[in-house]
Length: 197
Image (cartoon, rainbow, N blue to C red; front, side, top):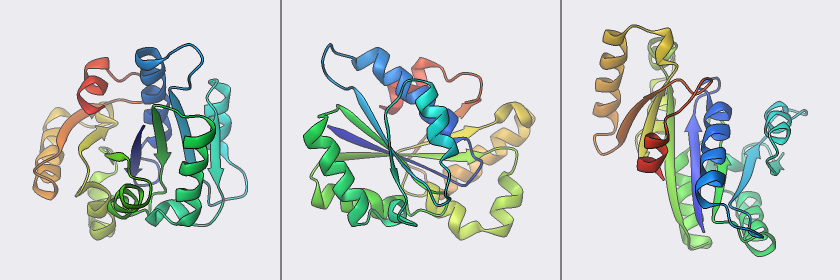
């Protein structure tokens, strides 16, 4: 079993990416009688809008309503991962973290206490990149600096030169990450997922 942490600021397209990624994993790894993917999402509000979207696509979702449990990989998240591991034995668990999460803490805690590999996929919003980076540089950078891969999402909403400048800035934040341009609300090419997971 492996865990994928989706990190990115609110509105960056995590739920759209999650849908595309989960469908890809089910298509690629689906086995009769075994769950390929389980999803944990953190809900700070009272009503889980994202989980309704995910459930409407036939995906099972486990919600965390414990404030910011997905921010640090707290006890609730670790307990849920253990429960899912025992009850469902999926090949993959995807954790959709909040926009204020620290993905490295989640990764370290899951690896230390659960003993499974963790992949961090960071999302950056091309359309709002400049505004968010100027207003909350530390938070935006914390979402991307330890990611294994970064998806620059919503590239259809900026020109090619702007997208390349943003990719260059992301590369300065995290030179080791694999970088991809995506339009997750439309499609993400399977070649991206093949490289990421």
